[in-house]
Image 1 (cartoon, rainbow, N blue to C red):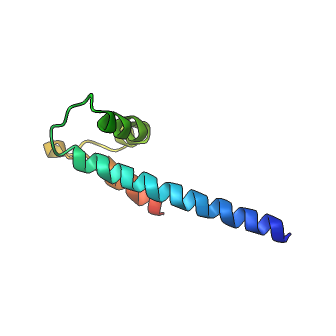
Image 2 (image 1 turned 30 degrees about the vertical axis):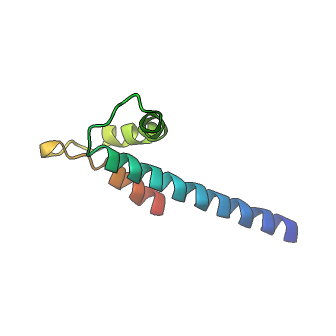
Length: 82
C-alpha cells in the first residue's frame, strides 16, 4: 500500500508540473500574439502547435467579443488552475 501511495503522489506531482509548464507556454503564446513575429520561427511554431488544439476548442464554444479580443488563453489558464 505504501508503494502505491508513493506512486500516486509522484504521478500527481508530475501532472502538476506539466500543467504548470503548459500554463507558461500558453502565457508565452498570448504575449507573443501581441507582436508581429515571423510565423516560420521554430519557437513561434512550437508555441502555436502545442497550444492551438485546446485554444481552438475553447474559441468554438465561447462567443466572439467586439474588438477582436481573444479570451481563450485566459479561460484555458483558469481551467488549468481549477
